[in-house]
Each structure stands twice: as C-alpha cells, then as structure tokens.
Length: 116
Image (cartoon, rainbow, N blue to C red; front, side):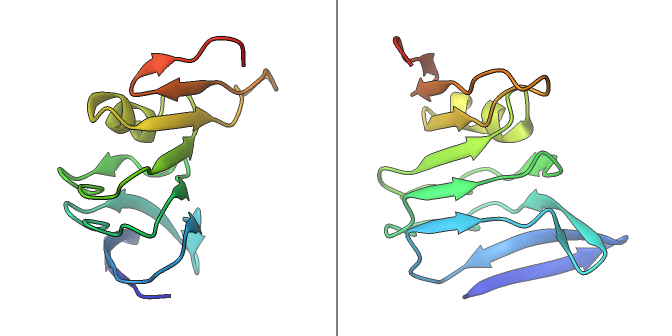
C-alpha cells in the first residue's frame, strides 16, 4: 500500500504514504494497537488521494499532513480531531453521522453545505 507506520507506547502513527490509491480507509487498529496519530506531512503531495476516512481514535494530526492533496475530502466523526484539522485547514469533510444515528453532514472548506 505504500504506508509507513511507527509504534510507540502501544500506539500506531502513520508517518508517511507513497501509494497511488484514490480512496483510503485508515484502520482503527493495526494488530492489537490503535492508530492514534497522523504525523506532519504524512500524506504531503499525494495528489491521487481524493477520499480518506479517518477513525475517531486518531487524536493527533500533524501540521501539513495533507498539504498538496488537491481535491481531498475527509470522512470523519463530528467533533473529532479530523474534523478540527479539516476545518482549520479549509478542507472539505463529511461526517459519518452522529453517535445517535443522525444524518451525516457535508462541510466545504469549514462551512456547512446547505440542502444535504
């Protein structure tokens, strides 16, 4: 797949990605360890990547993790680190619905899209 990971204190961090997938689902766990971080510049200039799903276990996303990823859309939980990162970096993100099964939402560049 072209991903690079590191393990510290029984937690996994995505440190880099060099693949050419257009869609990527980050796993909640690798083996028995949770994926809790995406390091700075991990997906930098991955221009083929258009959709990424980030689990709520990811508590840290480093600066510039997705710089140069043109037209990237992030799927995540509302109020997650991924939502905060997307909003503060003017990226489009979609929620997977709330914990009570409510509808998902689409945010374009940090603003809620109307009529969805």
